[in-house]
Length: 259
Image 1 (cartoon, one colour):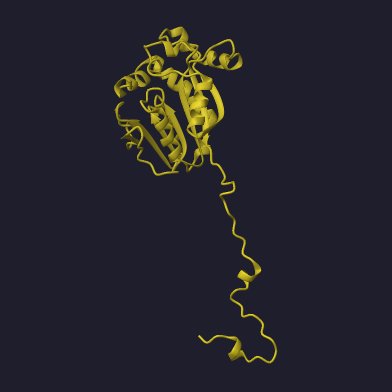
Image 2 (tube, one colour; image 1 turned 180 degrees about the vertical axis):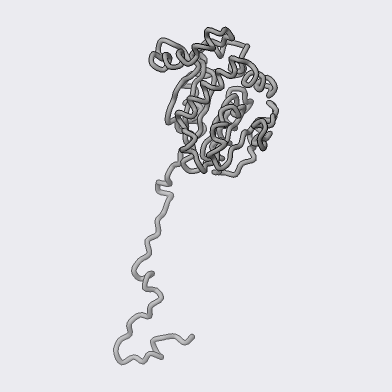
């Protein structure tokens, strides 16, 4: 089951709880990838990652928000040239190896073909490219609530998320969590969200976060094994273009074939 883009837009841009969630997740993203360090890079998002991408608009060479067809698409960002595009889940309109940083939010847990989505993500990542995946935490309150986008689709444990990345040829370099406040619109929780995030990061074993995060990179295996042959030219091959010495007394016309 997929999200509807109008519901996602309503949650993240019109609902107070959604705006708080947007800030929490975006702050965690920019801690890992400061926008200034992404200057001149190609940054993309898949699913509904548009709220996470705004900090990169000024410094990145190109920013693209990929939104899957079953979800729908919206123009983004508001009041600026459009950076969003509707795409197939397993066929993104991006060149192979063209993306330096990729954010996936509400794109994996609702996909009908998660392995194919991750394969497409691996395809577009370039050398040194990295992806940050955000998914609902199975043990958290957010995955059990139907009142937010995190209650739709599959939820994950940290081990399941890492295993799925590994199966796609992606190596998990860093794991984290976010969203310690409950999925509530009460003002107390909204106003104290920053405090709960800081507290949760210090005593994470006592508090359960709503979102799992994994920063991954593409595994590139060096060619090795008996099937790989290295050709080292022999001295005779190196000197193949040089005429061989001839014994004294033999005329040059006898030792060198005519052209």
